Image 1 (cartoon, rainbow, N blue to C red):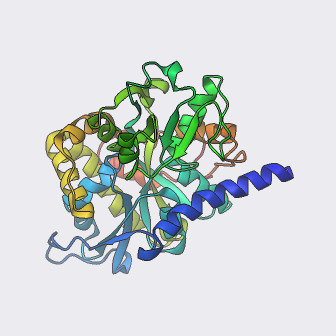
Image 2 (image 1 turned 180 degrees about the vertical axis):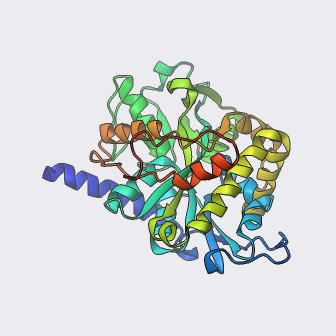
Length: 369
């Protein structure tokens, strides 16, 4: 690797890891949540693999609604029997990867970019992607007084959640496709990229310090509620309007030592997605109820309803789109060309799907050898 490229790569990884860890230092890797004590354990239920608990991580985003609904409906605890389902919530992918690496969580819902970074940084030894969760739910929302067309984005200040995160990579790739130039590290160029936590982006937008944002739901709909306009839905840039936004990952050691526990969590995930599809309104309410329990604040209807409509929940990890997203990160200079062979292990998921009478999913050549 050339010295300057190696230095760039290290700076990118450091930037990705440091900010969220500093922000979360006071409370560990993420916000700890109580176990699902409201779910009754069936009489005679036994611990799975002899485990006292399985530690599950997810974000407080609607794009992680499989986990939100699975928890709120007690599906994880039901499948885990007498093994307690413990939870931790996160606001950034790198911090969740650190928690996974340290053993603070065993299984997590996470976006593709941090999963790729975690896998490649560890030399392919830290995690496996074991299932899909969601597609879509990402939009470019702008101030319509300043931006009325895609070409107007040039010269403006656009927020993304974090340097090198999934939406940041997607926006940098879109900018490059317009023929514009931006330095990925500084965010300076024909467009100014402002890395801003999703929690503060709506206030920044309202104050006028950013002219728009490329963000996931529900942040996108929060901006619309503040007077923003959806200029572009990222799903329109992908074949079939499908691209991975959330995957399920597991510590490799946990997968090897406790496959039955992993199977239980995947059964609950498949059950949650099936229930979401069959009961969209009830599922939306359940996800919002869990968001309120986790954050202390539910989403208002004018944010929740449009956000929910733009997300598709799926057991398929949409592996071919992860390969493309990795290529986008390389193109942006945020990642050296990665070897992703083996990042997926869909064996247990496909066994669960087969038992449900569903079709198997594919790793797009990136499965375990």
